[in-house]
Length: 290
Length: 96
Image (cartoon, rainbow over all chains, first blue to last red; front, side, top):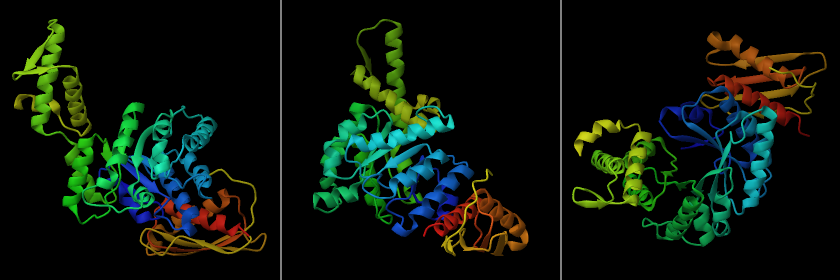
């Protein structure tokens, strides 16, 4: 969930809504005249507060703006879990930020890799370099920043999402190739929960690992849509049990409920169970529902 | 807090806002040897005034300043916010 980085009231309450990650923003939501105080506020919050959620700080771009390197200087010693790098266009920008992170990690005696990077693709140029960007070893996730991307495309955001279909697909392929996570862009109309559900369902079905949100009420909906149903969990467990039994008894071909089960189906079943466990579901309770 | 080298303000400066959970901090250069003086306005002054004043003074000292006048208008800010706003005002007060 994005949290404006210069708003103490929002920072104070951000951790109570159950977001998987809190992204303290000192980029687009902060006026140019308040960048200095926003970065200090976020840094002091990170040092003083114990957040249950993963902590991310979206800094300003390190070369396209005069603020990004100062953001890193103040934010990195506060040890966020991740730095979110906006508007990334080439892997050299990741290398620049990664080298700063490495320097601060060494200075403080932290393990290498303590602070990781999530980058956002927000332009066609960034999209054309996304495969290389995703493969940088500091990268743990790639995200889509739709509003800037659409401005770059010279079109508008639609309910169908057709204008984002290609970029979503390409970013997802690059993430899967690099074995990192892929996060979908925000849905700005917080009143339109039906449209939000439609968009989250679509990006989830495409393969995205999560959704950025801008309002607490969107968190519950994302969790609901990303948590497998009881029926899906029970079926996945049945597949995994059958596979384990086949392995144990050296059976070549196996079937569950009359359908042949092969490698990819086992992989998908394991993903369903992993997602359920990550969502806090007691999967063993679901076994009998199969 | 670890104290830094002695620094001097070159101008008055403010940071923060008069909004809930925030604090508007104004720092003004003071005569050498005057020390750190805090004027605090807060709805919770009776309960937390001493704690907040102490935190402000310690933050100013740790940032390396000895002579500063500070006016703080508090709207029930938490400690980290107080510290950030004081540091923000001092940083701005050092810029010419």
